[in-house]
Length: 411
Image (cartoon, rainbow, N blue to C red; front, top):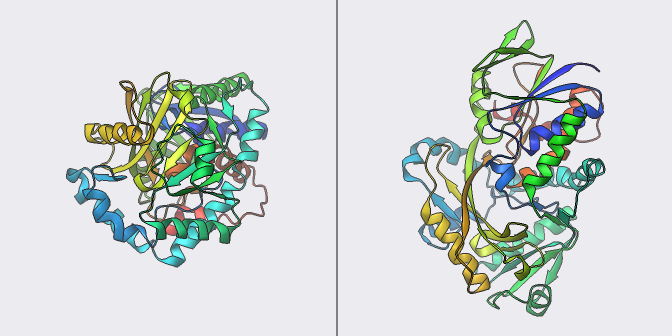
């Protein structure tokens, strides 16, 4: 190939794209204003490899629950009220995507790529020393006896898609996780799911592999994309760089560049939080998600990582202490007494109103490709998205239907 490829973004999407492009012989340079593994979403996520998670938030049952969620101090949803005017166009598009047909369209095409997510990871894992950084103990969802219709909907849709799921009762939940307080009514267990003991370390191992294979990294902020005929040029704060083709894979920050390219993609951010309870990872054997409250706890090297909630508030608002308090209280509701928490963190999940990512070429420029908008599943979908985009750049045929991920759907 020998084509020169420039990628904006050194998170799991950007690095996965780079590694699969290198397998095809491309010469790749990654740009990011931060060092790989810095305190952004690929560092602070829940660490789940979730190939079952095809049902997203654009659901027929969610809309009616939004007011109650916003009013509940333990609920999964929050708003920064100063951001509401900017969110209104996004919310209108979101509402239009909560019909049954739209919900099933999203679920079907999330399932298409989620089904391939773990094999794509394994292709990259084969090339690094994982050092016990991934555990294959499954992921457990639990719920109380409220909102049971929502749980029934989730189970039904996943059954229709052919997702393997194991319903569990109170006794089985206790056998799997005896330290959880017995507030739960039932749950579902995904034994084939996995979790990362430290997402940052895995990301850095991928980055080291990228450099070892001849990849280049520029710690620069790509401010603008220009063109010389069809040849794309990155304009950074220091200099300009010319490439044969480029990929925009910088998560929630991608919108600035797609706007610059004249493509109005309605990308916004779900702000997610985490805290750690150090030296407590022995309390759980696997990630546990409490569906009613929209949070989860993952046992990691750093301790128990409590993650979750959805806050709409853009990229510039400060961290919300009320959301941190929400996570702490929810963790104690699940596990009882815990030590003082550490490491309060806020990250930005790039989200589109139909809850499908954008994967594929730009509408306006044939040498520009996109890979962003994976909402809660960015960590799970990094390698498969990178593999798909690398195939597009190599002009390979595929038996996947990639039209649903095209940015053209927002035209």
